[in-house]
Length: 532
Image 1 (tube, rainbow, N blue to C red):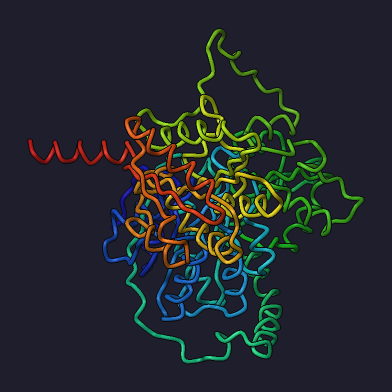
Image 2 (spheres, rainbow, N blue to C red; image 1 turned 30 degrees about the horizontal axis):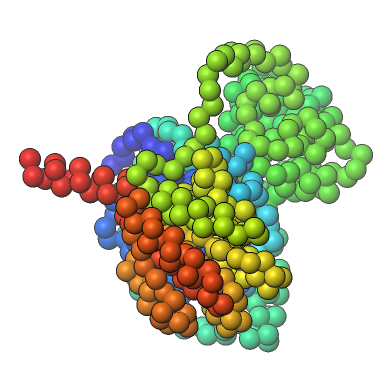
């Protein structure tokens, strides 16, 4: 039985994974990937799922489920691939037992990210198959295909989507739901134990599989050629969602053939055959010029190739149908002029947010020191860098606040203060705190605890109700683990404690704890609804 549902791209991926018979989904929340895991949690109670501490632990847990013979999905945003990279790359060396799909949601134009790195490079680096859907329906269909491909090749498969696909809706026709794999732990130990001797043999096996991977791309149902019989002055190689952008410009009416690429490695045979029918090629891809660079290598320096590297498409940011149209020589209708006399509305911390009181207190105390520096981290509290607080001097990556404060203190900065959220602390702040403790660094760490992963929608935070125990276990002196309630009425107490801990020559931790105003409001609304 089939049905058609209106789904986000993320939801289509989730439903596709459920219907492919997954037994577990492992993830750390991060836009634009979060809704995949949330959908599975809400719609498939039979699937094992709990938010992981970080992307590396998620990747390793998924690999463990694969080892046991069952299908597993691991989800993250693109920068999470950096955290998971050790396990991810090595999973290509161990290979898999049950199907394993790694879903990376990239964020061109950095709508909610620090960079716009392209996860396809990770798949190429690891030498595994990559899938890149062009539509919500294809995102759904690819999941069953991806798990089957993973089990056939005994390799993990990377599936890459972008924000525009993840967060837009379309009708999706679902297929029959498959049964979960039976428990079947792998009995072959050598390829799972990456001692150098085993790893060398496994790596040789991975290299030997590369022609098979390319053959799979050439015959893939997701790679398709729309070409005319005659040789054309211009052709388009369109990757993933860029295929939709190309087709919106009606290339067939212009006599422009299109080669759609949604499975990698790049099918070189298809590329060469396509190039013989075109005097030049425009490479359309949403992200960095991975395909364009490879086509340059395949076709040679003398072939007339156009794309992001040549300036025919913008080098940075999201691709759009208009950009593709302009590159094809189509005159694009100008968008409406920007509205006049409308003041911009930058993001801001919610009214009633406990982080506001934390920054008020920090700013008040920091003003008493000529060289105070406050190192920030990734979370909604990063908005403390903006007016009216302007309280943060740095924000680089998950967990960097503590280690940057440590390095600055080592260099002589005083006071060096780190502000980190509860979820980020357990994600990647604990190891930095241990470094600081072991080195007796003179830093003050504020773990701003709002009892949830607020920035991505209020998911569970791994360390809730454990932070004092974690800090004590790592070695912070008990008298220098302080808990405060960030409210205006407690400002005198909070500022006094901050001063005391700054003056302590060593590692101190202050935990301002108050529930996120958004999650609190949701709980109260739910409670009132139940009482009615």
